[in-house]
Picture 1 (cartoon, rainbow, N blue to C red):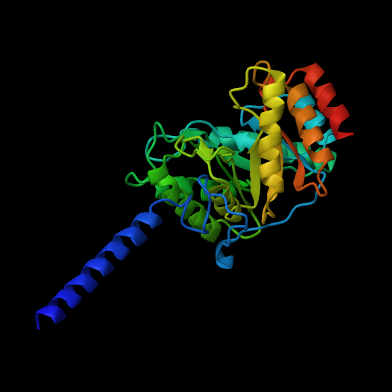
Picture 2: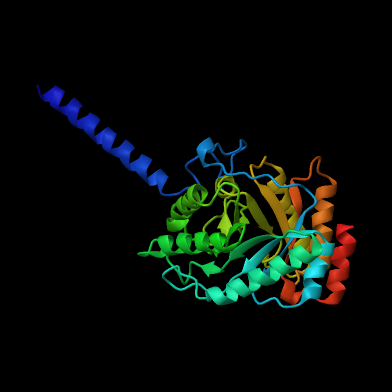
Amino acid sequence: MKKSVFIIVGCLVLLLILGVVFFSSLKNPDNNINPSNDNGSSDNPVVTDSSLIRYNKISSGHNGMIINVWLEDKQILDKMRDNNMKYLFVDVGDTAKNGKLKTSEEDIEHFLDKIRSYESANNFDFVLLPYSEIMLTDYDLTSSGFEDNFVNDYNRLIEMGFDGIHVDIEAIPSEQREDYLRLLERLGREVPKNKFVSVYPGTISVDGKTNSVWVWSLNYYQQVADRADIVSVSGYDSGSESAQEYSAYLNEQINAILSREWNTNLFFTVPTHKSYPETLDNSLGAYSDALNSANDNPFTGISVFAEWTTDDNEWKKISNFIE
């Protein structure tokens, strides 16, 4: 009798331990897909439930640019059209702590009317993807009403004439990364299938460290990408102090991208808003060098951050590069 009791108690303890291990693994989306090394990256691609994959494929050779709703210069629209910058990531202003946009509908309608008029006059269609930079050092995805307000406001922008949403939520702590995936899944369900869900991702870990809010494992990066139609791969914020260090950083990031197959459209985002060594010249050069040795180019094109920091000399360099 005593032996039976000990066996039963032992089994219950074992089940309790297994349950704790299982549920703790669910808390970190970087580590719960495949057996992996320290940075959450396995030799095999992440397998995502096919029902979660959102992939409206776009033609290669298209480019993009980050602009804002207060753009008034028609010559800038000409330059973007001439360089086939079809995809415009439009800053629509600040977001309140409750997830609601602060910019008035009048300002947004003025922007849309201006773009419609230009498109009609020039027989050219832009793809307009609105965004608002949200740093989770100052916000909380799980706060009451945030997600509902966020999703509803962007669906309202789509009704007004935008072509989807560009999600620029950054500095995501580990305890909110699962919440971020769920937000993307909700957008995948509620944004019309003929519209785009675009994301601005974190930096890919290449040294096994993912304790920074800015750094993602490659597995998590792909989980996010599978839930989006477009990913704007960052080509800056490297912390580099020399051109050589910056080039090496970009090479590592691009090689990490090249190591996987992607169910999304990738834009490589180059800076015109940064100081040396993160210059337009250095970023485009490193991008070209990294892809020269690749068998296939997974990128749709480049995207430039940002219109309001790009001078005439940089426009010439962009045009020469695209040609």
